[in-house]
Length: 292
Image (cartoon, rainbow, N blue to C red; front, side, top):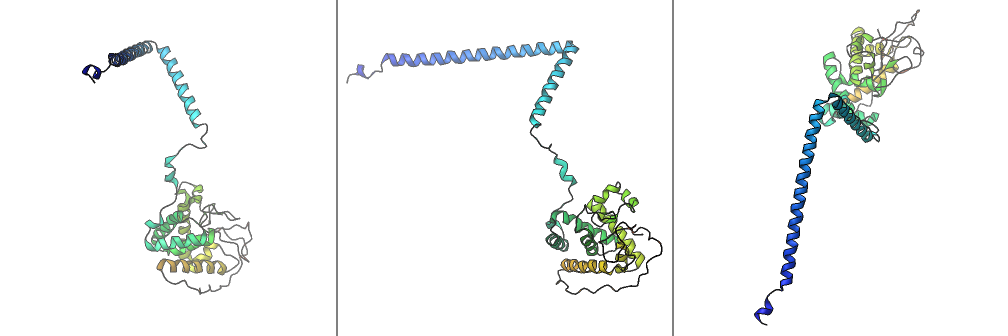
């Protein structure tokens, strides 16, 4: 093969050069067009701003049209939404993690959760509050929890036929003044507020009676009976919860409340403070009940 035969054909080199030239011309043309378009858009925007600044009526009209367009977009975006997002809703929730509680309180929380089929997270708040309130009121916190268990089974929206409401079934119409400290009567359905008011009513009843059993009789409003049916229920649950808290074996035998003679009053009894579960020989539904 000769040296002349090894040289690349001139036609191939010319085609490559032509292609490069065409690409370069296209790039420069695109740059010029884009540059000129941006300059034109900038000029138009400047003119529009100057015009709107000088003409208040045009500016108001433009603002109305822009606002209307934005509202339409917002409505279109939320048309399929069932509810609006509310990240702060978590602040209204009465719940906490049981693992953050002290061991005794956590044991009680999990035990009550299993027995009464209530989520442990809201129970955590109630158990912690019962221990705190019990210490201040000089009441065993497991007694407060036992009253809640028997009265409402930890249903914060429970209501009896005579109008006792909430966790501890306090007669709201009788203790309106106590709920004023929490914003009004509807606070009866706030679990923590109801617990605090109920604990105060129970504390007063125990002080008046001079014993826990006597206080429970006043709390349930037994008038024509000795209240032993209610006292036995609460005390049995109290001892069970106490055993769980202390990590002791569950007591199988619970001493029965001593019956005390009761003389039915000649006149209707004054309203009592809370109303417990109905029992034989108790006042019939509709009777004025409320603890004093």
